[in-house]
Length: 166
Image (cartoon, rainbow, N blue to C red; front, side, top):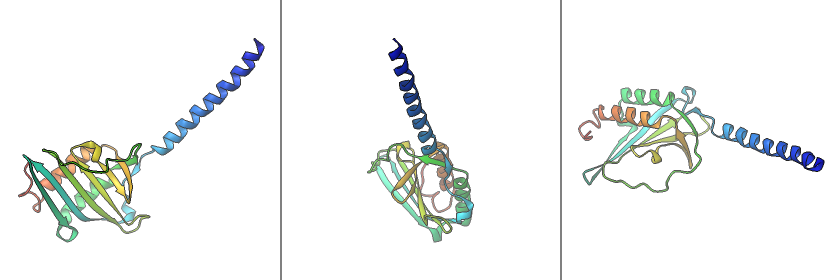
């Protein structure tokens, strides 16, 4: 009986230390951080919007030179207040444009950052939402609200409002 007790205590300590280690690693891995920071001098350099309305696929692309300062400022303001975290699983490798799909991709140039550009990918299908730095995709915290806010800004912008049907 004494041998079982003496073996029981080290096993419990070992299991507890493994569980604690897993929790600590998960907290560090999934810690949220700002998507972009003002110090990186973000600038909107490209916007692409793909819609599938009643089986008709439309793509609207606006280069940075045609993006109004007002729209760019509003988008940057939204992104400065957005937080991201690591993804547990990578996003799907391909995108299917089904009826009712709206996919927004915004390229942001970062002048004073480790990475010089990124993409914000937003869709009404949440599996495709991500902040993308190179091949690394991050989960956007509160992605539904960000998608709605960005779509609202685009739909009220003169470059898009004649083309987007809500």
